[in-house]
Structures are given as structure tokens and as C-alpha cells.
Image (cartoon, rainbow, N blue to C red; front, side, top):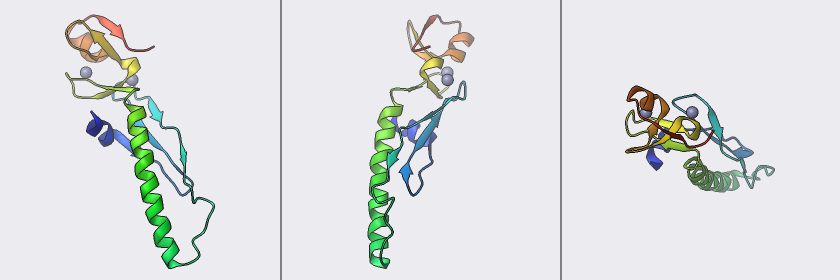
Length: 117
Ligand SMILES: [Zn+2]
Ligand SMILES: [Zn+2]
């Protein structure tokens, strides 16, 4: 599940904050992760050594922010086992035998309840 989200996660991070987004394969709705501020966004590295250090801090903070976004995205998205797509809670149904996205449920004539509306 984490890998599927990672594959669909876009990175919109810049020099001031870290931001990621995931889009629903069904309705196209995009979810943005809560932006995380880069701790050195207001600081300019004084020299080349500092620049390298800042770059490392940036990468480290981005990894942390990505992990947070990933965890958060898991509460908003579901993996449809039928079409193997990542869909949002509005497009995912809890069915009797197996949970699936609404388009698969329609095609297979399965009844169920949508996760959230
Ligand atoms: Zn959706
Ligand atoms: Zn599906």
C-alpha cells in the first residue's frame, strides 16, 4: 500500500516548505499534504560548506515530511484490488465480500457503502 501511494505521490516541495499531493484515479480529486516548513528557509548559507550542510538538512527534512504525508495519505486513499488503482474515500466502497472502488462495484454489480461522502 505504501509503495502504491509513493508511486502516485507528487512532490511540490520548494525552498520554503515541503508539500506532496496524491490524486484519485477515479474522480481526479487531488489531496495535498499539510505543508511542512523547511527549518532553514530563511537562512542563506554563508559558504560552500554550509551550503552542503543545508542541502543535507533539506533532504533529511524532506524525507521526514514525505513519510508524514504518506501516513496521512493512507487515511484518505484506498487501493482497489480489482482495477489496482488508488482511489479516494469518496470513490471506495465497503462491499460484502471484498472492498473495491465504485466503478468496479458498478461493473461487477456489487452493493456496498461508500467510505466517506
Ligand atoms: Zn475519488
Ligand atoms: Zn476498482
